[in-house]
Length: 159
Image 1 (tube, rainbow, N blue to C red):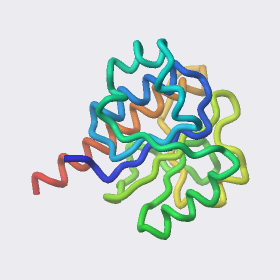
Image 2: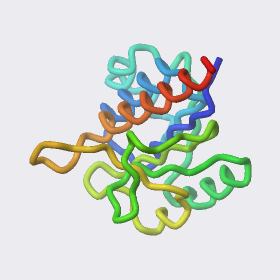
Image 3: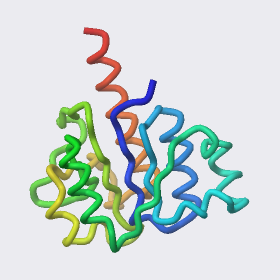
């Protein structure tokens, strides 16, 4: 059974990150993975890294220029938009209670989530970091967050 999690990787452009996200999203039964271009699924490096996840997970295309409209559409469908971004109002991932229906918005590899999309985000969350380097790779950040969402849903379903 699919979870109520949509992983939005529209702003991610590196194929290894997209492929890793596809694999992670499939393993944890995300509802959909949103890509900037679904043609990436045909590339050999994507196929290799995703380990056939593209055969099992629903993928949808949303280009960056359509992202704001797409996010508002998902809000209207009852999804909470959660941005993975370090901001002054970000909540710590370990203290955030995920709602059932979530769009996880991932940022660009270097810049994060551009300000024009932050206006559509209901809550930004960040991963606590203890070292000197202040950012994780987008696939790693996405994977940790997908796992935290999954963990919370598993605990919730045991009640």
